[in-house]
Length: 167
Image: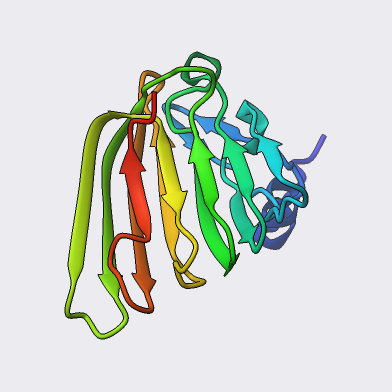
């Protein structure tokens, strides 16, 4: 019986259509998730949302709740990008978890004021009304904590995106 050859284009198509993660001898190729634009005032994420880019409309109050850190694997990650403002947009940890570690850099529009907020046990990232569209926060878990890095610009003040401990 002869050996059947499969071309590179066919292998590529098969891998792209898997729609799941692919483990290869200690490395993992992650499936690219669809973008998400939650509607309404509250969205709770799950482990299945890893890899998503979430577009947050904060023209009215909007809260995105992260899954419990114990429910996600190391490497779980999302990016939240502000698309509109008018009220507060909030990204918060589940329940009373104080599991956000990282920093947020905020600059006013002319670059004259810069604010950096750091926290080692935060639970909330807030896009305050007045934060300009395009501000973002990257969130990555190691299975124990959520590491955050955010950046935003603002029309007048540099304190319009913050990382804090609310409880």
